[in-house]
Length: 195
Image (cartoon, rainbow, N blue to C red):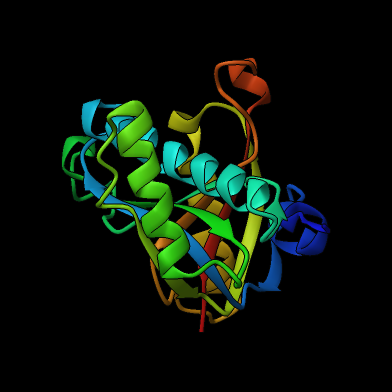
């Protein structure tokens, strides 16, 4: 059974440099969970438990059944509020993990039931959705999450200079595990859809 690995198949979306580049982010299928509150806060951590519990249960269930195998991809986040206007505790967000297009709703439902039976985790608010982003700019942010502001400012300047307009939510792709990576070495791709 061949293993799907999006970090290898979609390198342009899961690798970046510290220079702004334009990419076509296209369309993908994701497990998603929506929430509100500060990243790292109680609501956020609860959402992460549900999302990761579901994606790993899905992966191993499908592999064990001989249906498909895939590497669990990077966590991605969409942020819908401007941090200059809305306090972090009020941020609305969507956390997502890309899955193969062959994953169907019945696969998700089986994984959710298994997760609830085995771990007592109710992940019924994890959804399976197509996400279309299309034309975007992105850059690699190196450093702590709470210091990403200047990276967004740099991207805003780039859009003004190139007569571009932001066309959707701020998108972050988390390449590092902050529990195992020094803050100054944390890698995050920052992506903005444009028109």
